[in-house]
Length: 132
Image (cartoon, rainbow, N blue to C red):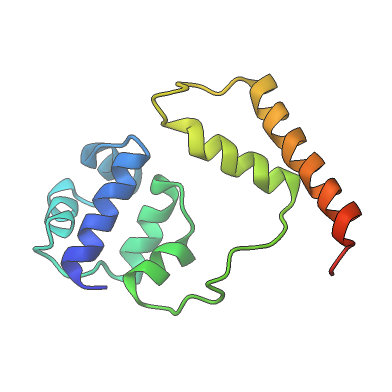
């Protein structure tokens, strides 16, 4: 990924999380002017040390940023075929955390979604067996 592309990715990720450059600066200590230059492709891809500071503020893993920046290769490009229900809950909560509609997913809605997915997984196991 080139510096400009990475900057665009970083800006999109920051906006997706509903954060301003100044908030990122406050959380990380990385200057807002530097972040602006990176987002506009006027600076190179940040160093691994900077990415390590940015990851928690952007609510992503350090490894994810390192992959996107091109420092490490993606380990497994395939999505997981199964996941722990707690991971599923986290993904659903993260997906709707900054969504405009619905503004906030209610607990009973979240449980309904998780229960529906569990039910589909059980139906799949009954139909096709456990392939593990």
